[in-house]
Length: 129
Image 1 (cartoon, helix red, strand yellow):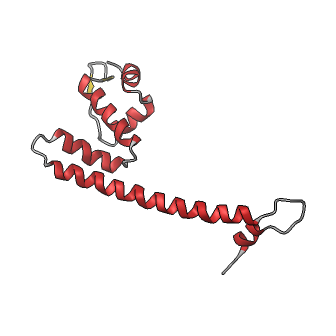
Image 2 (cartoon, helix red, strand yellow; image 1 turned 120 degrees about the horizontal axis):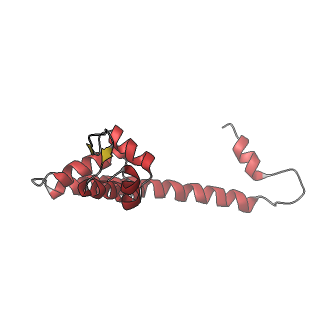
């Protein structure tokens, strides 16, 4: 199938599909005319990549997961390690965002939001210490 149909079936834009090919995540066959010819296995890989990216895995992590998926002798512990590392990263980001939210919420509550020029938000942002 051509890239338009592959895009429709995988749910990914053609540009993303070309990018995944450029970086070696997929390897579609080429027809006699030089056009890409995507097989069902390519569509499956594209969907796998889409779901992996949707869970926050980086392109490099997707490469590792795809290699493990294709390796029938893989150890599931290797897959779990990648997922646990990603989970720890997500937890760290959540903690950071929670702290940012607390700080900003404190500043918002401290600001009167009236016609006067003094504003604790701007004071905090300009604090050089």
